Length: 246
Image (tube, rainbow, N blue to C red):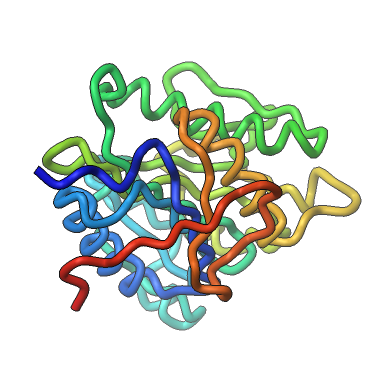
């Protein structure tokens, strides 16, 4: 058996702005590669072009406007394989997709969701923002407003994909088109609305990478590709051969 290159390291890749379709295809290929132990545990950090995604838990479309209005606004709509209901992604929102092989006692969906929530709570706490969980709901909240949404997929062999979306920038107008995660009586917020000097998306990505690695008991590591590297003090560069990469 091939030794696992992961060895409790979490390879953190900054992808910049990526379409939802491209990100889903990339995740699928990385999930397969992780299952075959060709790559280490990986965290993709990125932002999406405007898109409304409909998860497996959606019972009826939770749109406030017709699909034609979404198209007019330049917002795509996608069915997706994650759990959760309807959400919006767009520029200024930090999206994180951990592709992680859970082992032993980690193989517990609720435990994994709580670890993601903990990582996000810790990341914003570092900026002085007090966020919390709400019993019975996923994501993290500031009062009655959702700051981050979470929706994950667990594939064969307990390899995770999909993940979280943390509102950093202040443009939340895309959320007006949906009932976020089916919760009609709550709002959304963003770090730009909570802080006089909010971080850039890249700065927030580096903070989340550190807290997420800690929550999953892994060490952050940086890719060899310079364009994908975030400023994470003390993180080693991980060089590995991508077996079978096409």
